[in-house]
Amino acid sequence: MIKQGGAYVCHCDEAEIKLQRGGEKGSSPRYRCTHASQDVETNLQKFRGMRDGKYAPLTALLRMKQDIQNPNPQMWDIAAYRIPKEQIPHFRTGTTWCIYPTYDFAHCLCDSFEGITHSLCTTEFIMSRDSYEWLNQYVIPGTPMTMTVLRKVSDIASRLVEFQPMQREFGRLNLNGTILSKRDIQDLIDNKIVRSWDDPRLFTLKAIQRRGVPPGALLSFVSELGVTTAKTFVDNKRFQQTVRRYLERTVPRLMLVLDPVALIIDDAEEEDLDIPFSPKDPKMGNHTVRLAKKVYIDRSDFRETDSKDYFRFAPGKTVGLLHMPYPVKAVSFRKDEVTGTVVEIKCTFVKEGKKPKTYIQWVPEGSPTAEVRIHTSLFKSEQPKSAPGGFMKDINPNSETIWLNAMVESGFYEVRRRAPWPEAEGEKAGEVGPESVRFQAMRVAYFVSG
Image: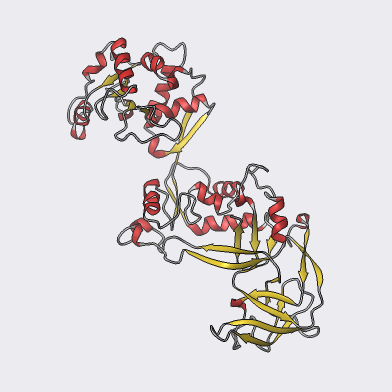
């Protein structure tokens, strides 16, 4: 019987360790490293040497004494501590430490220290469950074998494990039309395709949060799909649809104009309009928008020449302005002499006649201005990694459109003041940032602040 438990400092290189584990394709018998027979004091001395920088990278590592004959490779005396190839300063400890724990060593112990009952991971880690449970078992006080070497020289292992968390696996959820690999995302950042890990065009948790997707919407999406051990690919449109359904009933509505052009209503009288934040939820309340002679509409809502298949604003045509008491009819327009673009449209109220076929949004003069970014898919295909030339050749050059002089109605101030409002599931007041200032810009998209 091979004795298990404990740890030892090993000086074998990668080729030697590979032979100990059966060589190419496991064609040779497995055997334990000779360094495993060192006594505790020798291992302590060597491990302190690793900690104090006396060994060069790759010349020493601390290995756990597991079960080299176990069919699971995760039990073949895997590494607990290594000396990094490069001494990159740690964001907390700088260059104080020359060694760092491996994932396989730190994962289960940290889970236990933090009171984690169930460690949930994807199915790639199924084989890691054996080493996860094995290590927790052998560092718990009162068990036959303890990690003596680690306890004496490691601050981490000197803390006693209070209980054994359980590892459970589930199938990885993949979204079509994007990539989720950390390595691939780092390539996008390094090549300046995206700005950082929280770029709203990505699907990292930080990016999704910054895009304004509340925790409750993610919970709804996962609840719809269920949990399975099978690897699944879900259409990105389904994810977006779930988020929109959630936001539709939980966020206020405001009017926003991306490319403003002035609209002069000749016969308008100034008054305050009482507008609901949500037509579907009266409990959200109302806010006031000032109706004045000069308002702004979106340039895309006006054409210089009308046609039968065009239903928005044009000379001689009548349209409705959302929440205004009467429709308006375009009378004339004025263009910039240099650029030739329309800079002003004149109209009058139409107080009698048929109900207009189209309603467009508007904002009054003096409304807040902002830079607005609209994002679409970062990639052109549903499977970017399978695209010709790889995902870096599949980038959508129009994934971000920036409007520098957009205008939003003043109700935005109220939404920002009350955020997070309404409070989303999994979100607490005072613990969120500008991404919690969510609203639906009517006929445009859902937006967040910042």
